[in-house]
Structure formats: structure tokens, C-alpha cells
Amino acid sequence: MAYSLILKDGGALYQTLCLVALVATAMGLAPTALGGGPADLLCCAVGLNYLEESAVGEFILGTNILKCCFSSYRS
Image (cartoon, rainbow, N blue to C red; front, side, top):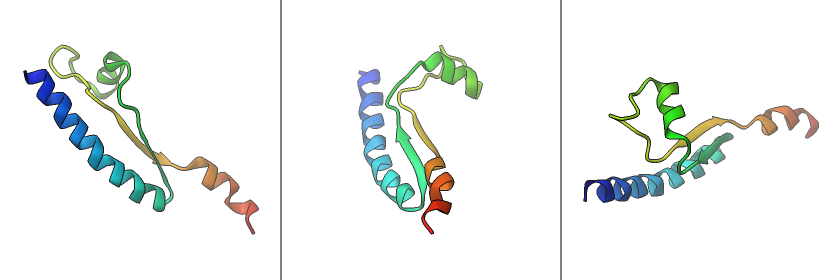
């Protein structure tokens, strides 16, 4: 039961992050919802214990490198 609630809460959070992704794209950023991946590597990267706290979903927000690289070619 607890795991299903975690997944439902994660889904609600992802729905909100889709709106954040639209705003971030309008700001020239590069948002990406990964959904899931190797949770043990993520926990290692952020310093969490994999058995105590694990990732349910991942969302990355970065710069749009293509926009940065090709902005000089527009003019």
C-alpha cells in the first residue's frame, strides 16, 4: 500500500513538473523528465543510502546548449 501511494504522489508531482517544464522552456532552459533510471547511481551521486532512500522519478533542469551555441548564427 505504501509503495502505491509513493507512486501516485510521484505521478502528481510529475504532472506539476510538466507545467514547470513549459515555463522553463519559455525561459530558454532545457527540462527533461527521466521517469526512472539506475537509482543506485543517483543515490551514490547525491549521497543517499540506496536502501533507506531511493529515487522514484528523476527530473533534470539544465541549460539549452543548442540555443547557446547557435544564437550567434541567427543574426
